[in-house]
Length: 256
Image 1: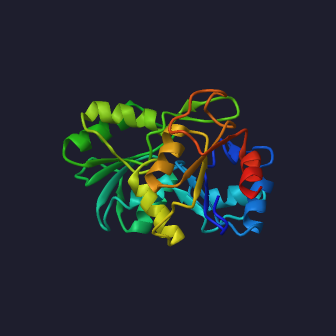
Image 2 (image 1 turned 60 degrees about the vertical axis):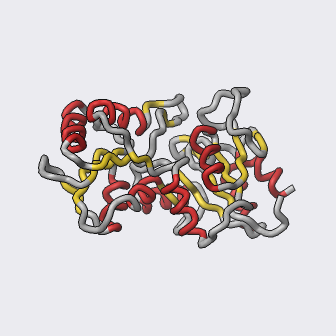
Image 3 (image 1 turned 120 degrees about the horizontal axis):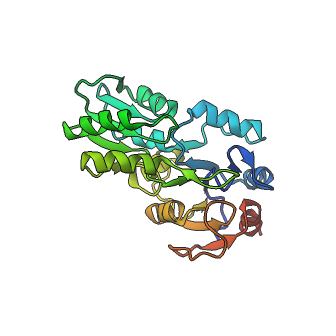
């Protein structure tokens, strides 16, 4: 463990909270990390919520987070250029990120440069038809993330990756994925931290296929917690640096 303060990158769903209900000890754990001098960033594949909504939800449970949230919609926006026309199959977080990038969000069947897909609850056959038709006509298929499920207090529900699978299958085109564990999200982490080398950082997550692999992408350490979607005792690959019951126990280790 590095003696100097290092960045701690935390997933949100399954690590800090479940559907905005804080996991026991997580709020205090983040406060302890910050008091010890570590910068805490919240790296989430949630693309539906706007940045302000995510910061407000964290503030509501006692975690100040302005400027510290990195979302998959922000990472996906890096994959489009200003003035490009983008069809959105997702939530307001994607629209916000694209608008901030200077792209044009369109809601018609005209020519588009890209189709961007993320989690949303209104997905239906007509949306899949329009999106896949645009991709077959030449639009790039960009996904905020490919998580098959989304954790809730009542168990996992279909995630953005499940929606993406339908559009990718219908269009016959493999998507470019922006969120964890892929390179665009890593690029965003480097930009926000201002660090070219994040090898001293720790990524805390509950999904080895996203959070663990994202740690590999960044070249940093992975701390796995069992408070999210991974069944207790399941095989975890890539092999975590540490495994803990939850974020509070992880922070006990980091500060110990």
